[in-house]
Length: 358
Ligand SMILES: NC(=O)c1ccc[n+]([C@@H]2O[C@H](COP(=O)([O-])OP(=O)(O)OC[C@H]3O[C@@H](n4cnc5c(N)ncnc54)[C@H](OP(=O)(O)O)[C@@H]3O)[C@@H](O)[C@H]2O)c1
Image (cartoon, rainbow, N blue to C red):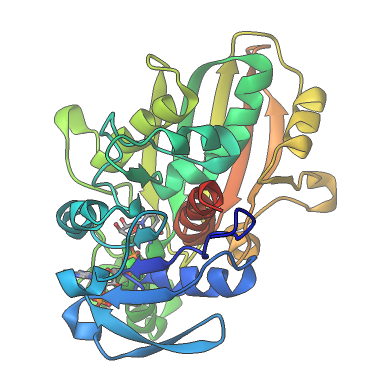
């Protein structure tokens, strides 16, 4: 073989191609520079035979079986956009063939042998993957970590307090559909009787949410853990520490669901080792990859999830110096939970891996 002959483009298998994240991933693959050879789409047996468009080509969805990985090997990437139990079972099947797995579920995020990666912050970590698996973080962590990471690099992060205002599609297709159903159910209720009528209109079936989400705010996301914390809150704390390499960083998180279909919002209070003023912090954020600053409240300019949905960056606004602590900043972040929170981050990680074999 000629020493100048380039390696064939790696194959990409997308497991969970029919889900909320998978649907966006297929759009992203059609929009970004194409580094892939064969792309195969995989989902549950319920979806086998469906035809989806990717890169302008009609592609049939395969059922997730051993046969679906036939022909994949070293240099190829298998992307899991599936529930954690599906990733946990099938990722080792893909790595046994020599392919690298990129998993967007919670299955491997706490495994010390699986790097947890947001390319703008710790892309270098992709290269060290003893199990052949790379994980992407929770969508709340992903929304803020590029901005927080850039400020940490400049001022040294000492403490973080975060509240999320999470979109319904964090719970996948089922979450988005439940919110749409509930909005229809409450639409006919007389305004004067709301919100008392919301529970009556929605009934017992609140979908994946702990209470009706239409015209409501639900301070719960995930499963109950010790002392009243939720699994999602503890995940954001643990992932932030891991990605920034700050093992004992104090992090307080409150996760809240709001009736938005797509686009997470967060309020962030960050305290640093050094004093920080708002003006230089703005410059840091303006230069940060993956972050866009929209911060002119006098002109009514600040990010909202309606603006962030369908876009790639984390949008930061409402940046203020703390009134009480010269080392602290307060700000607001919005990001598309299906893009930077999941599909885009997974695509970026996969491209880094593809680049290793180019
Ligand atoms: N939604 C978000 O904002 C977000 C953000 C970050 C991370 N994540 C994580 O990303 C993953 C996917 O989330 P999603 O929101 O896209 O969920 P989703 O809309 O419910 O989609 C789930 C996908 O997994 C497939 N699947 C389910 N059970 C399967 C099985 N037994 N075998 C094979 N495929 C199976 C589904 O295929 P069928 O269509 O055939 O059922 C579908 O393609 C989850 O782990 C989630 O926690 C989601």
